[in-house]
Image (cartoon, rainbow, N blue to C red; front, side):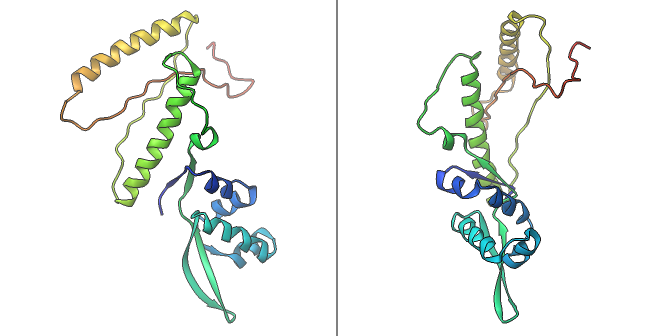
Length: 196
């Protein structure tokens, strides 16, 4: 089973959005039948069966086994992925926000959206080929004393990255996309003290 599946069609996303269907998708990381799920959720089997058919029609769950039970054929299903990633463009298909301002939040959102979509597609392709997608992540936090420091830091970081890229860039090499971004760190609670 793939670890992630990209939901990039509005209809597939619609099928996955209801609270019950999200519960079913989470539970079906481990295969189960409609009667088993109905008993666990304490719901009518017909209602669970209806939602399972909708998820199956959307390609979000798949048949893994059929077994005889009490004179009937019981269908055992599982989710087609461990997790589903929503392509941000599905929710914003008709809006073009493109901005080249490296300090604009809209630009960061666009870059992050494209990154989510591209990585989910490449990860799914790698899993189909039973290979590993080689990525790397750098994450840290910096505390700025004044708003103007953000711009000065950005320029210094861009210069530093340009130097490292120049040292490693090989014209015939495999291209990698490097994204550097910064945004205010969300506070984790009222007791969060960033002055220490």
